[in-house]
Length: 456
Image (tube, rainbow, N blue to C red):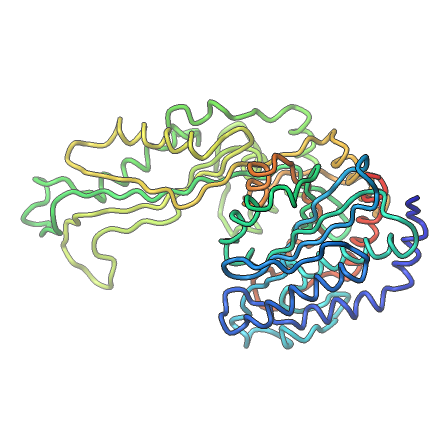
């Protein structure tokens, strides 16, 4: 039978060893985008596999993909009636450039002021090790009350190009009740929180063609329509004066925020001043009738990510451009789907495009939103675990960004994902001097122990 107290004591007694093992993992230069780090990528995958083998997992495999391997392992001794959880993580890290802005060697873990500094410390080797050490603590003192499977990839930092094919090919191998995604964070060192919803993404490139080539604006201006002017007008019309998207049917599938959710969002420490300080903006703007945190995490958006047309070099050139391009993205909320939003965009362009233009759109990226019921067993177990460790009621939050693996697992395996990690907003992810707060590394281990016990 699972005994959280004995596992917690084991974890406390092994703190120094756990930190040493985290440091050994951090020393592996597993930069997935660097072709000269192929051996390091293999070494990192084998490090994770070695941990699972030590814990008595069966069918541990370092499975090849078109690029970097996936680590798989399972522990099914709890039996067929116990829940099965898939643990997701990634062992690859971002490049370290600019290296001269690091205060210490990015692959020689250094501890300063309760933080461990190294590339991958927070994103996400520290998170993986915290979860692994929770499992070790339980197995070393009792029995796992649940079945576990691991899916640890090596391509997350380059967009996981091989993961969809891997998941769809191995659906039976990955069959489970839900996924625990350890690649996450909390609102503050002393503000425990759990993410229960993620926005989706639909990303498009819009291209307009007017005249067959660039023209002299003095000769043709006023007689030939300018694609850049047309594109700017089209973009301006995609939102009204209240910040609402005007694409036809855009809001048809949107699930409105409940009064209870809005009340919980109001408790988050992200005040208006927080948003101003974090963004450096002079003032906040957005959809009328909603707070900044609601607009940034619980409402759909439309933003221009890039514009290009005509002459953009130094000085002047009186050109009437022949082409204009914009990259536009929409963040989607639960129940919206990228394919439906694409139809909305096409309908808008068909209705508003002047006959002087030929045009096309291309979708570059898309993923569906994710949400987990706060009354589900998984969410309740996580919230209770956080409260047990921090001694205070945790906050529940939505995230404004997108995590493609959550969408992929929902579509391929029909499972929800629970986001439970312990990084902090100022951990310098992807930047020099990445760090992980060590008290949260240890509290993370304790939280995962409580979580597994609660689920069991």
